View (cartoon, rainbow, N blue to C red):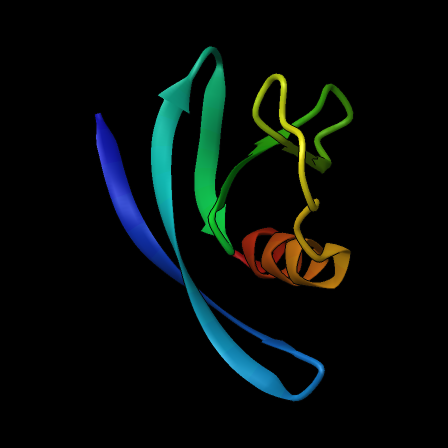
Length: 78
């Protein structure tokens, strides 16, 4: 089962909205977010903190860390 959610963030004074796909995964949930053309997986680690995972074999410019941290901040507030 998969659901799509909108994640609004403000980074450096610019408001942006990212689409996230929420998926049941193992014993919890993971959110797949397209950040400037790169699908980033956000899931909780063993300590319960969100971590961002790039696609296997990814080469290229990594997504902006401020954007990733802003998205994680929104998810943590839910």
